[in-house]
Amino acid sequence: MASLDFELEKAEFRDFYDTHSFMLSNASRSLSSLLTDLLPQMGSIPISKIEARVKEREECIKKFNLKYRNGLEEKIQEYVIKDHISDLVGLRIVCLYEDDIEKISKVLEDQFEVISVTDKIATIENTEGSFGYKGLHCDIRLKNPRLELPEYGAYADLCFEIQIRTIVQDSWSVLDHKIKYKKSIPNRLKRRINTLAALFELADREFRQIRDSTEEEMKKEEADPEDFDDPVAASAVPIADIGPTRPVDRRLELRSSKLNAFNFLKISGHFFPDYEFEPQKVDGFVQEIVDAQPLMTRAAMNEKLRRHISQVKRYQIYFEANTTNRMNPFTVIRHCLYLSDKDGFQGILTNVAREFFEAWLNVPASEQN
Image 1: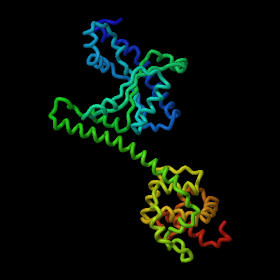
Image 2: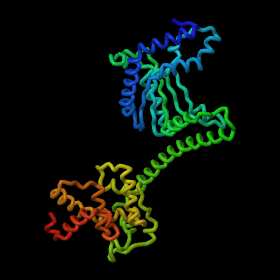
Image 3: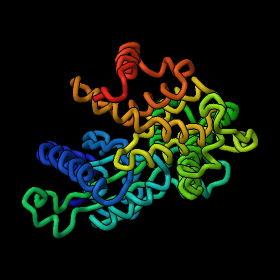
Image 4: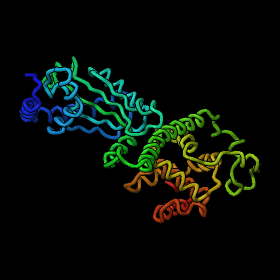
């Protein structure tokens, strides 16, 4: 029963907490599993992690005492401590980019009853000279039809707090809590803390802009005219690669864009349309190519594949029929590059792979099967 007796209400809350601790633990695990399953199905929102916890009993009392007790007692308004602890069960969703926070918030609005939202991002960004922890806090409840399921019915009256942060915001929050003194300290230390917080904020913005710029570069490559069967573009390759029977316009060669991960994906996607190239592998593979031939262009790369891929695919059939291994598109491309310039790309194949390939190449074409 509500009262104005803080000592009595503390005892009542401790009794409530101890009695319901098992249910609270189950609730935190249940909602964490629900969000882990739900968010990937609601759109392409990359999630770093989802964490759940039950707030410690004495921390709940401390929070009530600092945040609510004085105001309630001044108004002579009786209280029950548990009614004012909205984060008794708390969850943290850590995403990659700031604009993902709003997407996650919309999913929560659609799937749950949202009681209140605290936008710490807007609060800080609208306060001049202020830096610090940023994130979005939502107090939610389960709602129908989910509450009709037996596994969720026990949590009908329970309020959950969900914190949505980016990786950078989460890192800053962890480090910020390690700074023991932030208020009653010399101004020079306050400025250093604010500078550090501003750097984290800048990092968040830059990660998002790098992502956006990467997507723009990909779209530019997709919008470029196809040059896979363009004799003008194909002519922009080194003389050593095409022999004396095919003259090269060096101005076209210089004009052809240098090979990078984005135009490599377009070229490789043409030759291997059904294969999904992983960005991290592409990045390292293209760097390996550029390390071997720093002046490699998009047109030159295309020409190397176009000239040699048929022969390498014949070798692939032989190789896979006579070994237990398989040649994925990266391996096929490696063999094409080696064929195009055995000295320049000698290191792109292992010794064993190179020797096996050379043995096949030395067999008359009519017997290469």
